[in-house]
Image (spheres, helix red, strand yellow):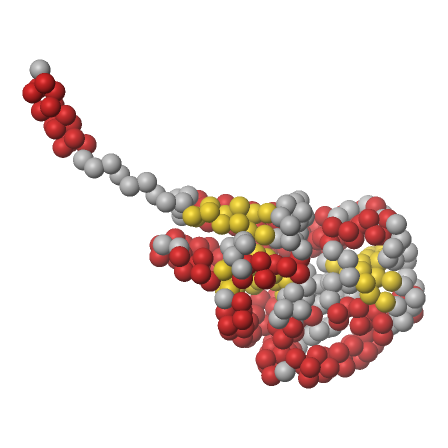
Amino acid sequence: MKAFLGATALVIAASVGPAPAVAQTTEWKFYTYFANNDKPTQLHRAFSEDVGKATGGKLKITVYSSGELPYKASDVLRTVASNQVEIGDVAFGIVAGDVPELNAFAMPFACTSVEKFYDAAIPAVSKTVDNVLLERFKTASVMHWTMPPQQLWLVKVADGLEGLKGLKVRAWSREQSEMMRLLGGSGVTINPAEVIPSLQRRVVDGAFTAAVPALDWKINEVAAFGYMLNMTLSHQAITVNQASLAKLPEDVRKIFLEKAREWAPKYRAELLEADATARKTLVERGMKLRDATPEETAKLRALTRPIWDEWATKQGAVAKTMLDAVVAACN
């Protein structure tokens, strides 16, 4: 009997063969400073889930939104560089303290066309951006995207540019604050999660942001007016820790990078659609939206043009290269 069982075991082992290797799963944390239900966070989750499916579960990316990890929006680049999270959504206007020379899109009215941002400006500057990120932070940008143009949302209706005098407005870039100063107002830095409470308490009279987050935040509950200035685009990049990217198996890394390229047009299309929907919905909820007149836009361009020169001179050759490329591509 023992001999029979031993022979049977050998036959079974021979027929079954060695146990198949279990596919190893790499887990990444993806941090975004947007809130849990904001449109960009939804897109980040959909992108991450698609990567997981395409890699057969070999790369699992978990998205963490604002408040779920102990980081601020200005921390994202350094957090990815130190590998506290492997991937992060970097807004160059917000992390300008770390990479001021890459903040060309924050120059008022330098580029306000989403189409030109994707089709011309990003191809012109992406190599410069990647070189700086890799050299100084050992990170790589795998996708560039933008929110539709930044607008000014106010508690009360403003009667043209003159109506902005004396107002205190939440600004998320130095250039937005400087424009308010030139108009006779002031800009203050407030984290996205604190914008609505600050408007409720009248700590500020308004806030700069695009229509999509304005709707996500239900800004219509605390503000009455949207001044559609089309001031700037927010240059965002999904940025990955270079060492973590290099550690991925070659097939997984290839799929991840292919998916990043595939999803850039999806971000573009979905956010443009969301922008149109947001404007329509905010009006339906009682807000008054008004486009800046051509005369007002011309005045704002002339007023803020020195900001470009001051910035490029202060930040050096890389900044000038970035700004020249952006302006040429968008204008």
